[in-house]
Image 1 (cartoon, helix red, strand yellow):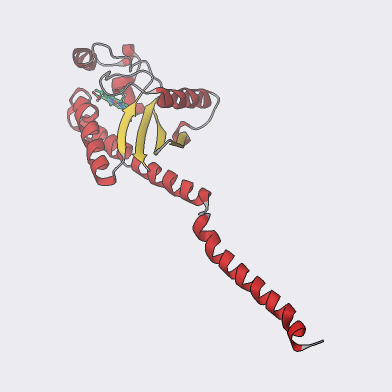
Image 2 (cartoon, rainbow, N blue to C red):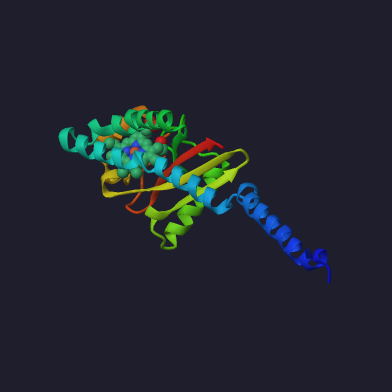
Length: 201
Ligand code: HEC
C-alpha cells in the first residue's frame, strides 16, 4: 500500500467531518425551532391581553365602593377603551373587547374569527372547563391573533346581571347610553366576552 491510499480514509473522514461541521452550523439558521417561536408570540399575546382585566376590576371595585355601581359605569364605558389604547401604544398590539351579546354596538361586535372562538368557549365552559383558562392564539396570514375569555364575576352582575336583580338607577343609565343593550342576563361563571389582541408579524 502506498502512502496516498493509506491516507485516503483519513481524507474521507476529514471531508465528512467538515461536512458535518458545516451542516451543524447551517441547520440552526435555516430551521428555527417553529414551536419555540410560536410559544414566544403566544406568551407575548397572553401578557398583553391579561394586563387590562385586573386593572379594570380593581377600578370597578374602588368606584362601586366609593360612589355606587351607577357611578362606575364610566369605568367600563370610558376607562376600559382608554386603558386598552394606552396598552396598544406601549406594546404595538391592537386590543378590543368583543362579545356575542354586545352592549356597545360601535366597538364590541366580534368578527368571524372572534365569533368562532366565543362560541367554542361557551360550549367548553358549559361542558365544565374553567372559563378562566379559555384562550386561543393563531397565526392568520401575516398576523397573530389571540383571544382570552372574560368570565362573569359577582361584581359584574351589577351591570350585566339579570334585569330583575339590577338597580333601577343602573337600568335607566344603561338604557339611556345603550338602546340596543344585549349584555344583561348573565350569571356568574358565564363568559361575558373576550379580550382580543392582534399584531402584524
Ligand atoms: C358599573 C357597571 C359595570 C360593571 C360593574 C361591569 N361592566 Fe362591563 N360594561 C359596562 C358598560 C357601560 C359597558 C359598555 C362599554 C362601552 O361603551 O364600550 C360594558 C362593556 C363590557 C364589555 C365589552 C363588550 C360589550 O358588550 O360592549 C365587556 C367584555 C365587559 N363589559 C365585561 C365586564 C366584566 C367581565 C365585568 C366584571 C369584571 C364587568 N364588565 C363589569 C358596565 C359595567
